[in-house]
Image (cartoon, rainbow, N blue to C red; front, side, top):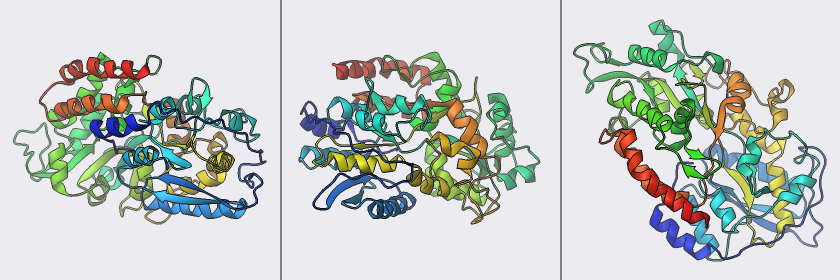
Amino acid sequence: MKNQMNRRDFLKVAGLVSGAGILAACQPAAATQGPAAKTAAPASAETVTITFTGWGGTEEDEGVKSAVKYFEEQTPGIKVNWIQIPENYAEKILAMVAAGTPPDTAFIYNTIFQQYVKDGLLLDITDNLKQDPVLGAENYFIEPQESTRCTVNGKWYGIGSCWVAPHIYYNADIFEKEGITPPSNNPDEAWDWPKFLEVANQLTVDTNGKHPTDSGFNLDSMERWAIQWPTWSIPLHAAIASNGGHWLNQETGLIELDKPEATEALQKVADLMLVQNVNPRGAAFSALGLTNTQMLENGKLAMAIDGSWALSWITKINAKLGTAVCPKILQPATDMQAHIHSGFAATKYKDQAWAWLRFLGTEYYQLGFLKMGLWLPSQTALMTPEGMAKWYTERKGPGDGVHPKGYDLIVKEYVPKYGHVLYMPPGYTEADALITPALDAIWIGDKTAEAAMAEVVPAANEILIKAKA
């Protein structure tokens, strides 16, 4: 999710495909019954192989391979060639498109989904979805969020893989040792910002046992940090939404990072490093040579803001693990998104591509990733008590269950009720080439959030306005 192509490479490759008119009508495939039922395959005299590209780590790779095997067993006549591209994914996909060899189906980033739709690259699956008795049923997906991310001008160009959202992970042993009540998974009990700062100061300590507000506190000799709040779009959007702001105005498609609600939130995150000294600065964090997971495990970090996907590996740490909702500024809020599964309009196998995309939108496929803690459900049935019993396991310790006590509130209350969807308009990759350096200036203290965003947002929005034309 964090990989971004640079402005020059995007323009060079996108220029080869933008406006190419790679549009094709999508023929509805026969519907099937039941979320895990055999996927209907169009009659064919010979087996058809379609390609499916994506990124991800070991967990995702293994999960997709398992799903491919099951799908092929259930769907005679269709083979799926899974191509994992861990690095420079967007650039390589556009290069494949430019060469006239796009994948048949693929993971699509939230940052480029609408750009691909505008350029005519993605398969319109509207009729297929609406005619399907399972996926097309009312309230099969969490709404209106699913429609928000998957449709453009009322037409469907993909199906969301799942939902993911940032929240707190914490080392519960540290809280017990310090006698501090940990944060809650209940959004109604989210810490307000002053409470968060108070606890963060208590949990941050140098090697002499001093806290940031103590005289003689030594920032260059740290025993433990309280929090690590990453400074990229997903965790930042959670803070902005909590302050009543927006990264993007979803109606106008323009960036609103220069509005007071957004700049105040960005400055609060920066001040965790620059003023309160409870969050390691970027250079200091890199110098440690440890991941946030390793620091949580060894007690060098009390809390980390990270995506829900990180549960699949953080749950394995040899420490008592807890989770909680993010602290609120004005209101509980988190970012809510995930990659989209789409077909490419140029595929020669539209019916087969739909059969695979449909399978990816069923309970069977999602369950595998839910069980390992990588995903959160996007299907309403998997959030019911009966549905959650199929995948939710309470963590007793490393290797014994996955989900920390109370995590069901993250699933059922926090994400669907307080999640804010963020999907980028056409032209955003180019606009982001202005936004990201300006954000970097905030984190090192060169500029305030207000000044940095005031300088670049108008120019970034000019790019977005031109991209609409």
